[in-house]
Image (cartoon, rainbow, N blue to C red; front, side, top):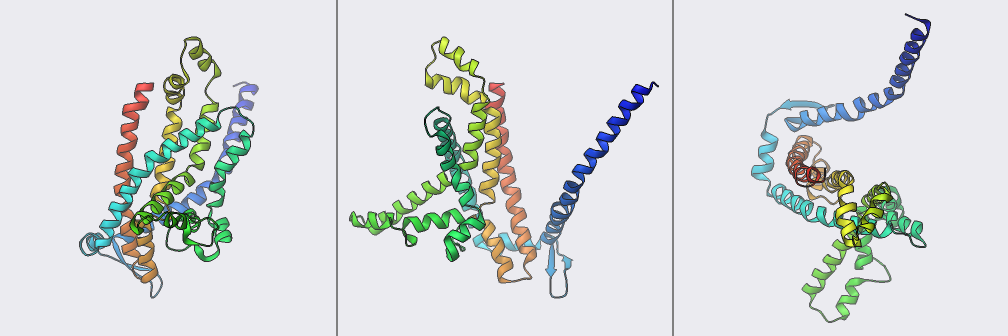
Length: 306
């Protein structure tokens, strides 16, 4: 073996060693803060957890799941509400994000400022910032963004209260409450589009300009450019946005199943098993539904575009 070959192999081994050193903190964090809590939560779901003297577990099999499904009607109702919200919010958020991204990707004066404004809710909706802005108004009623919107829609001291405006129109109370809820839902959905818009804009900027030039030469309209150039080229980006949105909706602060699981522990410290069982059963349900959505998207859209 020549000296040059030995030197090259030595450099490769050194690169591998440095690479392992760099990813070692990630492996330690994965083990301590993800894998161990994950295994512990699975064990809690099938056990009776006693915290009176440390952490002691007694294996009880499926009793926690039977209690949830057999004697707790609120859990089934919350599951239905969470799944319904999941399937209604997902297409709306994707559509709004794509529409806003198409607008923000155009060349106009003040484009950077407009993008910053649409991304601003992502920063404001973080727990620390919203807690500072809203004080104690963020409670169990919903997410941080939902608390801010409820204040803007008449639940706080905002100057413009939509509920007051609707009341002055002389509408019945039930119609006023219904319209107020619809307005709050629209703003909540727009509030949830920041990351998705950013991903769509980044995906559109990666599309080669030559494809649009060819489409113009062929006489394609702007509408045809969107459906035959932009939309198919965003296939993988849409998949990424789809996964992110599903995870975001599943783990939202105002998710009724998540809130109920937290309430179990808040009301009784010995209900760790019930809380873990509620979350794992919910995870299995939404995992199956998410898998069906992703499978259908890949079979119907990605395969056709590829």
